[in-house]
Length: 326
Ligand code: ADP
Image (cartoon, rainbow, N blue to C red; front, side, top):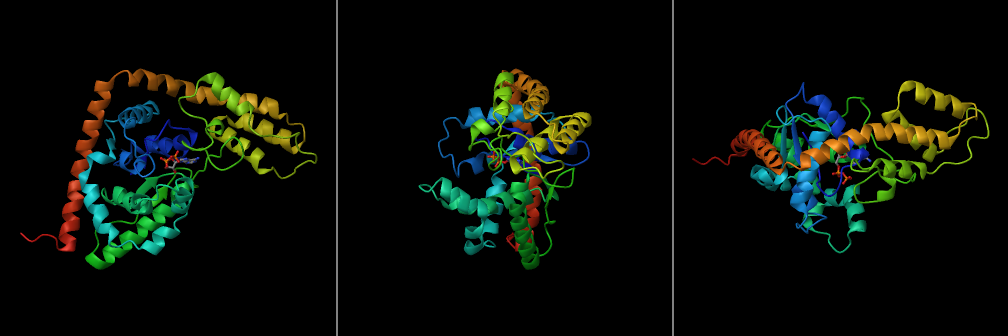
């Protein structure tokens, strides 16, 4: 189980942190992938653009290779059962703990005028999203690790108090290590809302991709053989490892170690490899977006599958909690 907020265009961080793993999982696991529209209300209360964003992000999921026949691809707001589970989990969540969550502190800094209770209890709703399907594996990027730890706390508290209902969910990545896709300016991670010029979006046109990559921070190259890479150079290598083939990567690693590297050439190569990844996805998104009826059908189909799973879980939860009086 996993989810992405429909708060803007999907980017390379969403792709490598989450969706690429979704696509790999879809043949071997029972998968529930969610468009987290309710979560987006914590920071984006204006709903005028919401439907458009939901349809776009849905199309982006499909364009990346997700097959709606194999997985449940659904909207969070269609699952009322999650709201019920969220309410029960809130009784197992402590204010002090929630206030200490780093993502909460970040959000308070970014949105000082709208520090709502939904923002504070974001990890509780996220736990409910996962536990509603009694999920074991949660394919997410590195930034979500702490939220998973919080979800495991609620699982243990619930199971201890009411009897075993939930498995402990763990963050999941096929390459073992969770990924953080760095932003192109060498500061922080790629993200939908921050530093958009340093984030590569799946909707970016080829020349935009090239321009953004050519602007990425570099320097004159190492002065001594086999030096340690500064973080901004390490980031460019990291991006290259995500999209380029092994020979290309080896060539630039050698170039760095022998002080012959030309970062201009490296960025040109990276840009072309990135265009090769993004352009087909972008073109598929545009084709799918034209077919709103198809997207609505997928959403309904996903909701039906997710609701069936959620209803089964809530029967177990109500029974375990003794909320079954007749
Ligand atoms: P955003 O931060 O862009 O708003 P979300 O909070 O909706 O994205 O996160 C959706 C998924 O994408 C999560 O699994 C998250 O871990 C992953 N993700 C987002 N940004 C990155 C990044 N830069 N690197 C790796 N994974 C990321």
